[in-house]
Structures are given as C-alpha cells and as structure tokens.
Length: 86
Image (tube, rainbow, N blue to C red; front, side, top):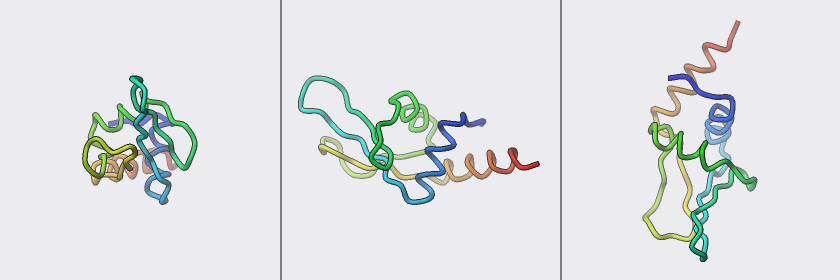
C-alpha cells in the first residue's frame, strides 16, 4: 500500500506527537481538520481513515476529537520509509 507524500507527512507528524484534530462546525457545513494547528485536506484525512491508517479517538458528537496512528498506519509508514532509502 503506497503512501502519497502528503499522507506520509501526516503519519510521520502523528508518530512524532503532532495533534490531528477534527473540528465540528456549528453551521451545516462539514468538519474541518487541523494538524499541529494548520488546516489539512479533508481528502487526505478521509483517505487515511478509510484505509485504517488513522482512527478517531473519543465518541461521536464532540466539537473536536483527535486522531491516532494505528498499527496499520505505523506499518505503512515504516514500509514507505524503507522503500525511500537508497
């Protein structure tokens, strides 16, 4: 399972302790996501979540919730780092 550069950066940041947070809006619009306080692409987050590389922590309906790197995500990141080494 290959990672894009953006996905690898997100997983690496999570592994290094950065917070990936889902923020729910009070308006009818969907949530937005931040990584270490900076906005992150919804497509990137949903792609990682859909492949089981990250998992939302906490219950539904919270105004903000964090994501954690899963074992599968750690393995994908390690595999990507191994492939990129000369």
